[in-house]
Length: 158
Image 1 (cartoon, rainbow, N blue to C red):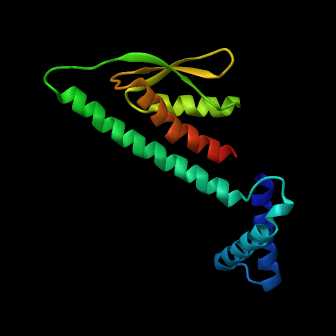
Image 2 (image 1 turned 180 degrees about the horizontal axis):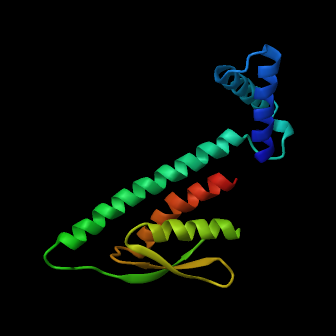
Image 3 (image 1 turned 60 degrees about the vertical axis):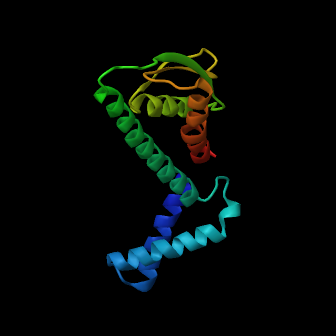
């Protein structure tokens, strides 16, 4: 991915030198031209086209923001009730993520979302132990995490 970005910037500067125009508009045109060249030649690179990975990262960011807002609303509803009827629980969630940075990112995203906290990761990095402030069905909570954060992290790292 880094090679593709560097190549795109080099192609943008090359475009500027060929056009003998050194303004930002010429650089942007060259950058877009470089994107087209890299997209056409993408099968000759070892990694996938870097804009696909960038788009996946942007989607992961929006998923996190959405989950952050929804969980904040849920926490406010719980706190503002006159009678606290929470069901706190600790549950185990198996993950298909294999790399350390993927597991760390998933743990951080879960912990940053209000109402949940990753307590521990198993020794084999296959199971996360999560504390939830108010839990419904455990399978629903696990599927929610797997279908949002874990799926998006897999898409980014593909």
